[in-house]
Image 1 (tube, rainbow, N blue to C red):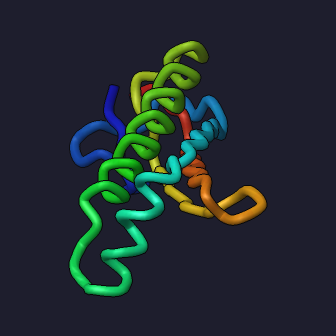
Image 2: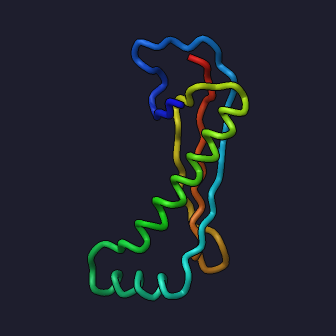
Image 3: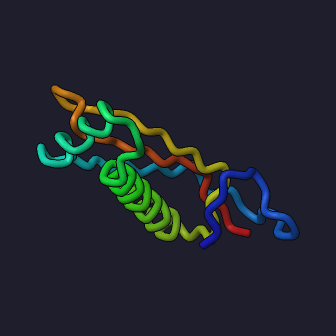
Length: 105
């Protein structure tokens, strides 16, 4: 399955546009991660803990996006867009939304 943010795949013309597909992943950070992330905010530096959570949520959303497209008979997803939002009462959950166009090349 080809998954790309571009609208074309060089050398592979679109044979059929199947439709828009989307997927979501919501991951919560536990209180320990929040505490360590807060320390990073105070003292500076990158938060490897949060980076891992974001990467995990992104991969989950892309995996689900691929499954949905494959289920429709697609062999590629073009124009993929990823949106990242915080949700929940205290914003302690991360939501990743992946959207793209399922096609057959």
